Length: 456
Ligand code: TRP
Image (cartoon, rainbow, N blue to C red; front, side, top):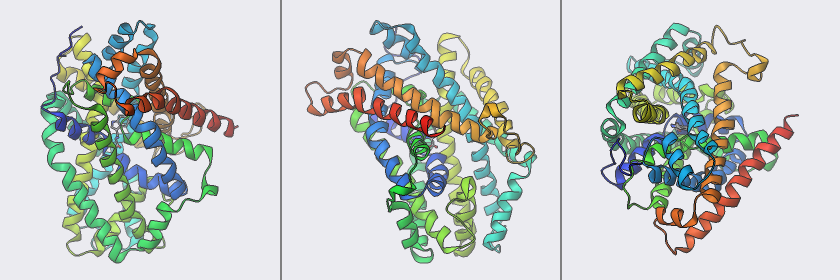
């Protein structure tokens, strides 16, 4: 086993932070977090989500980065390496396999939503929203969803964009994009929060997001919040493991991961604070509007503000870029494995896997129009789009995270883990290890079991 790896190493710890933040910050923060909070009771959902980030997300993320850096290869081969090193049964390698599959399943619906964002770059730039009232803006979104060929075009464009970067190699292709984009995206969100402060019902939005009303909470809601903590941190499927494999040997995993977690959470909360005041100031809109929430609320603001068409265009470009720097990490684990172990050329491997995700994605395109009533029992009476989201966020990612925590907590030798964390004799190390051994796995298992019981 080589310890250097064949994919290269990030230039510095900071490049890793940028790449991992690029992966973490995406549609999950700007599109999914607000609409899920809206559908699941606001503050109650937000609080559970924050608790899950702290007690499960961050500790498990450290574990995932650690395996990647120890193995220095694709997630599948890194898992194989640490499994052999620990003298454990080869079944643990399936964490890597499940991750590759989960990545493709997520990519299938992710690129469809990213396609909406691309369409909105176009629409905002051409000024269609400028003279629309909120009802017409909602109509624009419904019309887009009702048009499969248009959705397919944007889905295809986004798939190509993703494949392009992955084919070039994540090291070369991505650092640069993430570098400039992240701070600008954050600034744009802050400007929107400013707009909401001046023109939205800021108090109502704030209370909705941060008032904790326990009676709004159900076990399925808790599972959704926990699943979203995994989704938003790109956790549980090897993406962060793959990036960890490129991390310099002497960089503190704990500090790095906490930085990424804070940035990711800030972006999500800021997006919520930008969107909900606009929702409450425009009565036809509902917090529980579902996946369209971002796409109907913000254009209302862009229609009303001076220079709104320009600002809106920039905003949707930034959302698309954020989605782009996330989607590459969905494909990367599988590509890295094909290159390492099956001697594929990187571009071939990339187009093969992106092609599979693209094909699956067609079922998600159709979920909003021709197949909107296609909800087979096998898919738990959900459309393909909803089912893939459910299957990955609420099942595969939490399970992946559970096994990663168990592996690092119980299977790897303590001395190895301690050395890899660069934390010999540090008291915080013992606390983290305790959390990864007991708290995170117990919480994940408990939430999944109680949800299951609750659903019958
Ligand atoms: N975290 C990204 C977002 O919030 C999506 C994402 C990228 C992801 N890579 C992942 C989610 C791996 C789960 C697993 O938009």
